[in-house]
Length: 88
Image 1 (cartoon, rainbow, N blue to C red):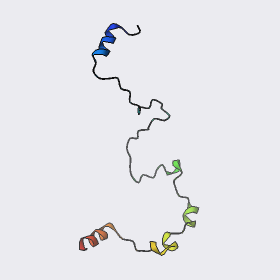
Image 2: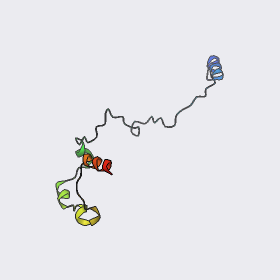
Image 3: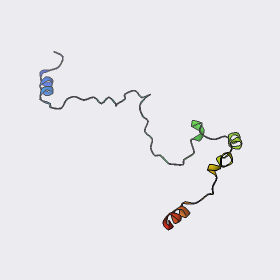
Image 4: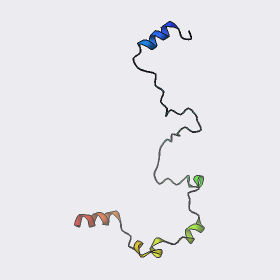
């Protein structure tokens, strides 16, 4: 008898089963990391993850408007777009 009688009685009288959540990851290496606050457009950590575009790549890339006529157009602002949608 590994458990005491009081523990066995408590287990029998408890209507809720013991449930272990399989998504609770105890391994720290694979556990999801919680960040304090996400700021959209915060580019301070671009050098860490390698997503920053280098100067050479920026100068050698060809804009889509020069490659294909489907992407030609003019720049517009949200204010102008909203004004055009209201008048439509």
